[in-house]
Amino acid sequence: MRIFGQNVKSLRIRFAVGFGIFFTLFLAIALIFIYVSFANFRKEEFYNRLKDKALTTFRFLIDVEQIDYDLLRLIDKNTLNSLYDEKVMIFEDTTLLYNSLDDKNIKYLPTLFAKAKQHREYRTTQESDELVAIYIEQGGNQYTIVASAYDKFGRSKMAFLKWVMIAVYSTGLIIGWGTTYFFVKRIIRPLDVLKKNLRNINYNNLGFRLPETGQGEEVDSLSTTFNQMLERLQHSISFQRDFIHYASHELRTPLAAMVGLTENALDKPMSPEEANQLLKALFQQQQNLTNITNSLLLLSDNNGQLKRQEYPKIRLDEIVFRSIEIMKIIFPESHIEVDIQGRLAYESSLLISGSEPLILMSFNNLLKNALQYSTDKKVKVTINITQTGKEVRFINSGEPFSEYEKERIFTPFYRASNASTVKGYGLGLPLVKQILEMHGAVIYYLYNDGFNEFKIVFK
Image (cartoon, rainbow, N blue to C red):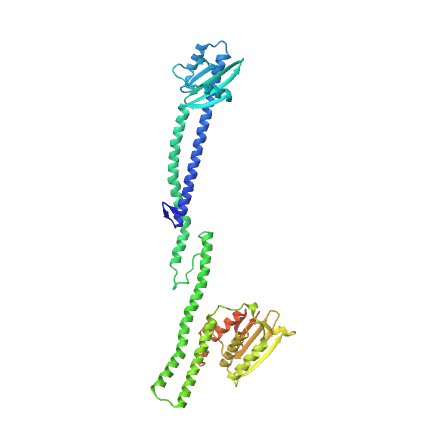
C-alpha cells in the first residue's frame, strides 16, 4: 500500500488510512447527497409556489370579470411579500395583457413561448431568479403566463445548510480519523503484544508460552499455533542439545583410547607379538567407535524411513530364535527360554510387517541387556498372540529401576545405577524404542515379583 508516495508496511497505518479514506468518502457522499436532495426539494417547492401564483393571477384576470387591471396590480402589490422580487406577465399570443411590476423586466424570447407551448409548462432560471412559463388554451385563445421570482429565504436556508455541512464534515473528519486510529490501535494491540513476546523468544527460553485466551479469536488461534510450534521446536532443540553433549562425551572415550595406544606404540620399539596385541586393541576400539557411530546415525536419521505398510511380512518367532542364536555365541553360559502362547490357529498369526534387520537389532539389544543385568544369567522370552495384537516379553531377574530411572531409561546415553559395572554407551534402549516406533509398536518396562520385564506390543 502506497501513501504519499511511500510504501507503507505497518498494518496499523494501513488499516487506519484505509478505513479513514472509506469514512471520508462515505461522509462526503452522504452530505453531498443530503445537500443535493434538499436543493432539489427547495427548487421544486419554489417552482410549485411560483406556478400557483401565476395561475392565481391568470384566473383573477381572465375568469373574474369584476377585477380589472388596476385592481389586480393592487392585489399583487399587497401580496408581494409572499415571493421575493416577484414578476408575473400574461400574454395572449405574443401580446402583453398584464405586467405585475413595471420596474422589473423578464427577458423573454420567442423560444420561451415555443417551449411553453411544446411542454405546456417550462421551467428555467434567469441569472439568480427561477422562472416558469405556462401555456393555456381557453375560450379559443392562447395564453402564456410567465412568472419569475428570487427564492430569498430558500437560498438563505441553502447557504446556512452549506456552512453547517462544512462544519459537520470537518468535525466528522477529525472525530472519524481520530476514532479510527485509536480503534485500529486497540484492535492491533494484541498483535503488538504477540510480536513483542515473539521477539523475546530465543534459544535459551524455548519453554516460554504465549497466552492463548483473552486476545480475540484470531490472535488466540495464532498464539495456540505458535505454542504448538514452540513445543515441537523445544523438543527438537532439547534432543539435539543433549544429543550433541552426550555424543561428544561418548565418542571421546574410544578416540582417546586409540590415541593413547598409538602414543605408547610410538614411544618404544615393539616385537611382532606386541604389535599384534596393539592391532587387536586398536581394532576393538575401532569396533566400539563404529558401533557408537552406527547407533548415533540410526537414532538421528528420520529421513528415508519406510512407511509401515511398505514393510514386508516377517515371522516374530523366527526373529526371536535368530537373536537367541547370536546371544548364545556372545554369552555361551546363558540360558534363554522361549514360550509361545495365545491364538496360534494360523501360521499368519505370528506375522508382522517390519524390517527384519531392524527388528533383529532391537531384539539383540533387549536380550543382551537382559543377560548382562540378570542375576542368574537366565532370560525368558514370551510371545503372546492376542485378539488386539502381538506381544513379546523379555524377562530377567534383577533389581528394579527407581521411578527416576524409569522415566529416563529410553533417553539417549542415559545409564541406570545398575550399569556401573557393565560397559555400554546408553544407546541400546533408545535405539530399541526408535526402531519400534518406526514399526508402530510400543515398549513398556514393568517389574513383578523380583523380575524385570520389557514388553513390546505390535498392533
